[in-house]
Image (cartoon, rainbow, N blue to C red; front, side, top):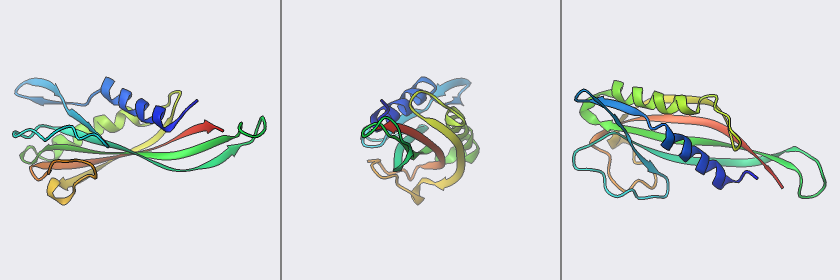
Length: 157
C-alpha cells in the first residue's frame, strides 16, 4: 500500500539514480543532494552545486468507495519543492540547466507510488534572498533556481 513514506522514498530513489550533472574543467560531475529533515553537514568552503529537496503533502480527498469500511480510495495531492544552488559567480544559466535536468526527471513521471505532472523551473536569484527551512548552512555564496513538481498518490483505507 502506498504511504507518504513510500512516496518520499520513491522521490529520493528516482533522484539518486539520476543525479543531475554539470561540467567543470572539462569533466562532468554530479551535484550534491540534500534532503528535508537531514542536516547534511555544513556546506563546503568552496561552493559546489547542490539541490535541497522537500516534499509537501496536501489534504487527501475520497476518490472512490468500495469494499466497505477501510477499503475506500483516497487521493492525495502533493508537491516536490526543490532548490538548486550553484556558486554565485557561475551564472544563472548553469543553475537553470541543472534545475531543468531535475524537473525533467519528474515531468510526466508515473510509477507504482505516485503520478507526477507538471514540473516548473523558476530562475530564482541570489541565495541571500532565501534560506530553505531545515537547511543548516547559509547560502549567500550561491545562486538558486527553484523546481516545483505537482503530483498525487493514492491510498486505500
